[in-house]
Length: 282
Image (cartoon, rainbow, N blue to C red; front, top):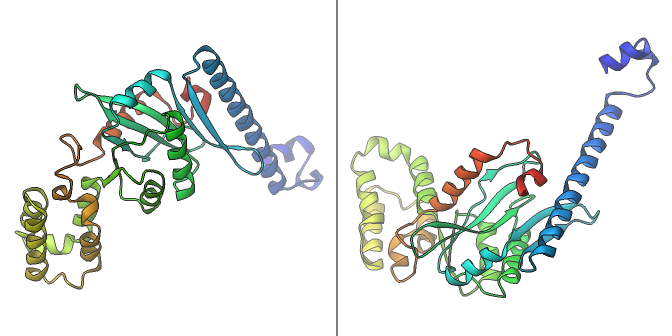
């Protein structure tokens, strides 16, 4: 407004205000966004023309604005058929100028190497969006569901997986659960030096569900945690994160979403936060 006032000889000579300028700026940015998405979709179409096995899905809103993108190539589709035993899905990394959460679908091959099974750019992390993602994944993979899937502890994620992958074993990242638990129970850890060691043994060293639940109850009684809401929430969701509940399911040598975070770290080295979607995709 200061620059425009200088050009026109003072603020009194302007027939618009700062809100008008802000609206124009927003419209210009939206125009750039539309062109960026148009160019991205044209790029997807070219890839699909070259390779019919390339798959992409687009979610648009009522104004026909692109809100989410999902894509996999033919090589990924073949990998998924063989290595859908354990899939990791994490949304903690934003990589572009629109601050859209980047969510890689990650697996493990027969050499214990991390493999990329699909990529999603999301507008938010709601049940509706996650349902759309998993529907797109099934469509891309010929209807095949993952056998086991690991995510962070998110209610929207849990609801969408229950709906779209009813036969898959869903596990939450133990590291996130325990990290949050230690934050909430800092007061106890600081006063009772043995509590953290006893909790670690209960979670990581027990061999059976019965042993885990017995030791958990002993900790609850010993440290008066019966009325602690967070402790009870951990107990109520134990079948989603406790290692002893997954002894018969394939989560090879891991109880965390570290594979996804490792993939995120790789992308962070390559992309700048101000990259366009087209730059990110190419």
